[in-house]
Amino acid sequence: MSMPPTLPKDASKLEDAIEKWTVPIGNLFVSLFHRIALFGIGAATVWSAGVAFMGMANKGSASIEDLLLLFIYLEIGAMVGIYFKTNHMPVRFLIYVAITAVTRLIIDLVNTKHEADMAILFMGITILVLALANAVVRYASFKYPSKNGISD
Image (tube, rainbow, N blue to C red):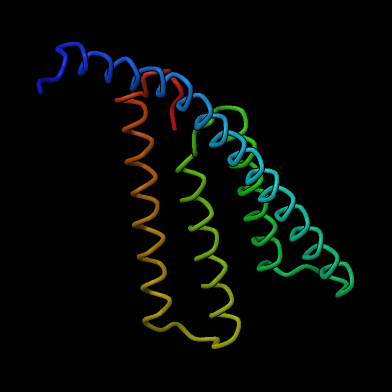
């Protein structure tokens, strides 16, 4: 028994029809997930920043670590806003968050130990590496912009 010669062509048509319906539905689910996740991240960021701010208010003062923590929340909020507007993750903001977090750790370490040691040196080197990574990302996004013109 031989197969009709049109069967592979029919299978291709069926596959195209299935793809025509499933790809838009899949894209819709991915887009919905991104939006829900962004609202969740944004809400958690606002909530965490509010709790941190109230802790500072109750304490009666804000230390440099507290202020850097608020900057981290600000940078995360900016990342969420940029992702909402552009659908692109701003990698530079992740680097800024990391630099701010390491700076916060250095200040905390100096405040508790009151002496310089190798850990502080390594954290300083970490900041240097992150700053260089930021420079590379900025240069690459300028020199090789994305297809739609949105740079990172």
